[in-house]
Image 1 (cartoon, rainbow, N blue to C red):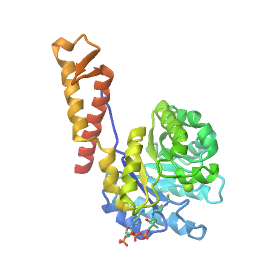
Image 2: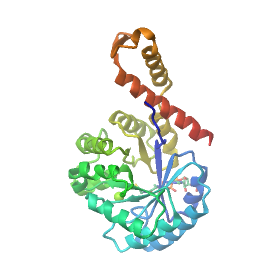
Image 3: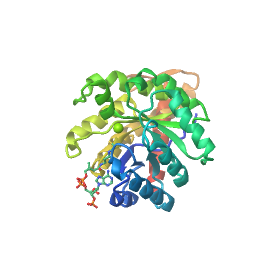
Image 4: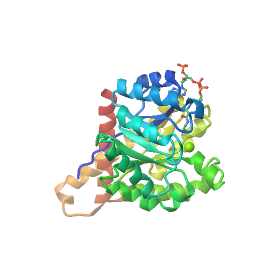
Length: 296
Ligand code: COA
Ligand code: MG
């Protein structure tokens, strides 16, 4: 079994209104950039931010980094112009906030088709409303519909806290059912999922703990708000040397003639099945993709 993998360990938000940040992004060692027109941009700055994002993305210079434009929500006065601008700029993806139902994504996909947007432009969906939590499976299923082009979920934990009134506290215990529901919905739809942001960007210890939790939950990466969060995020979301060594070891063992007809073997006192070897292949593919990415 082969795995193709695109590193999405880190996705750094930056306000489209901040020209300096858009420029600085070209030098940051980050997998994805989310150029924001929504929450990080004040109403009076929306038009300037839109122009700056179009010229930054059209101008290029972002190398291997995946460039994503977050538009304003569909029920705002800015959404149409944001979408037209994003189609013109040609990012890798458009991130749609406040998605409530599959119809929201279908509507954006329809407008992309009408605007003759390049098929290379994918959709990402913010999962951040109470309805999105209740409709997660149906929204995730858009990942199986090529016309919708959905390729990633992004957890919007700040909005989710606001809309549900659930508190976003260390450990995120009360958010866990929603986070894990979205992980399951993403996997069922065959798409990636990125964890929410950690607001206290100077608290690197708390950030490490939350990254580790994201890894444990099965998140593919985490959204970030500040460049100082990148390094720890990559350390957390890259397979460790031990994980890679273990993956190689168990795959080598299943290759041995004496194990050719076995479904489960014993390794260092643990039961190992072929599914574990397959999980290991995924780790190896991730590590290879990260190595190729950092060379590019
Ligand atoms: N992307 C790119 N560069 C960033 C950045 C980001 N998200 N956040 C900070 N920087 C840059 C600053 O421009 C500054 O660069 P400089 O030294 O070349 O001037 C440097 O990093 C240090 O910034 P710092 O002084 O520590 O932070 P700040 O007070 O300027 O900004 C925030 C703090 C929170 C306002 C800023 O980090 C930010 O805008 N984050 C993203 C917010 C966002 O997009 N939210 C929406 C989704 S949750
Ligand atoms: Mg938001």
